[in-house]
Length: 115
Picture 1: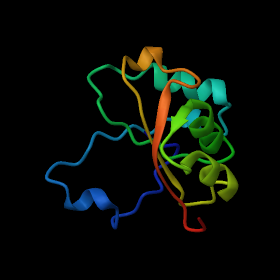
Picture 2 (picture 1 turned 90 degrees about the vertical axis):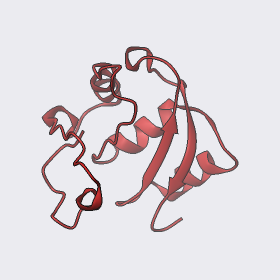
Picture 3 (picture 1 turned 180 degrees about the horizontal axis):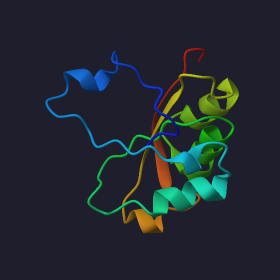
Picture 4 (picture 1 turned 60 degrees about the vertical axis):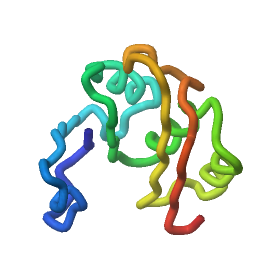
C-alpha cells in the first residue's frame, strides 16, 4: 500500500518470482494517525504481510502508536532517530486487520540510515 507511484524500476520486487499486489492509496498522503489505522483496518484477512510506504509525520506516528511492545532497544532507537526518510519499522501482530489498534503490535525490527 503506497501513497504514490514513486517506486522506480530498480525496486526490490523486480527479483521476486511474482510482483506483489500493489495498491496506490491516496488517503495515505498527509493522513492522520486515525486515518492510517482506519485504512489498515480495511485490509482483508487474506493479506498476511503488508508494506506501507508513506510520509512523515504519519508513518512514524503510526509505528510508534501500534508498537505496544518492542524487542530490545528498538522503540527508543526508533523515536530517537526521528524516523528520517528511508527508515523501516517492522511490526508484527496476531489477529484480524480489523482488530489492529494502538499498542496491538510488537516492533521486531527497525532500520534508519542515521541510526
